[in-house]
Image (cartoon, rainbow, N blue to C red; front, side, top):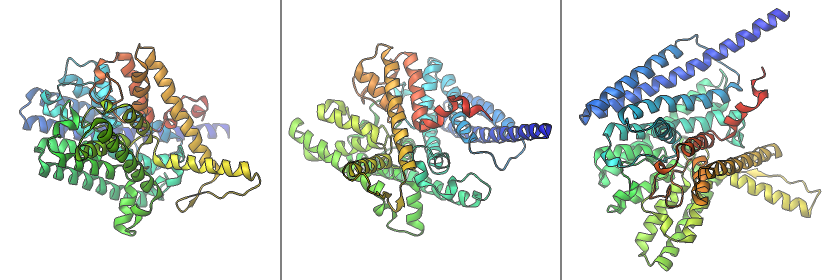
Length: 495
């Protein structure tokens, strides 16, 4: 009997290992297709060396992907292995994505190449590259398509994986696609396809509108992809400020960033059955309220304190507020020069994030709302200790277990930022750089504040050690922190 049990456990582990390898192989095969597209861009712009390196990198990813994918097909595995699969998948994708970047830009260190690709795949938008307009078009496209791939990966993770893992209150958005089992697959496939269609549509509309409003074709495609992914990579050192002579582009980008930060499942529901799904959602309304309030505050502040005209102040206030709260990371100008009030507002917005089930990062609006519910409950119990308090979020009841998960997540989220800021300070970085660098990494925003890493700065000036720890912060933030940290607990590895 004991021998049979041991054989059964070994079989289960082997089956899970096969499933793990197949998933990694599939992702590398997808990445190799993206490399082929980037190679095509290099060929189109007659960049022979870039073309050769992209083809070489594609061959490496293709071979590795085929070897990993060519294992016995497994239809089901334990949910606990999703923690390992999710974390290692993002790490492997970033690792292979850095290969063409290092080959094409030989002066770039491996640390910088790793930082750039992690920033791209996690849609953070921080960069160590300068002189962007002089770089090969293939590299600029590669950065954009990595963010675009990362964007759709984030949506799938937020809708299908994290709710199943009960990470930080994500169970509140549980759908059939969040149940990792054979029964859920038909429903899961339909939901995933619908979300992909929404993502492709949003990207297509952004690209088309940018082109009509004055961008050239290449800029429209790359900026359309990074806007839909709320990634923020631009083809110019001045970011979206390069297009300040075309205000229509600034307003269009603000619109697409807002839409990309809304729950994609609500778009699906709106087009299929409930036309008012977006309007009635409490998370969406809270998100839009914050955007409007912060934009108006900064507009009035600029008009009164900086004596700007209303249209210019409103245009750049809306754009930069939207860019930061959606964690896109574009900048139309150096907003750190607007004044102390602007600095505080943008620092607060760094933590906020967009809605759950979107491409944006950050703490997410719904967690702030649930924390407010918990505060109201505690205040009520202080006055009426024996009161029975029923809490609801939207049309769903919120129990203490869910609120506890949110509270635990918020604690570890801010603790991660605090620890990362402390680590960065050991590299002789000033308070503003250390604190906002840690916050922007974990929140996946992009630019920080200050002269070094602010909207007009660049992360290339930081020591390699600081860049390495910032990449850890980006991955932690994108994977909702707990997904990674649980792998470092001894009990996780006990069968």
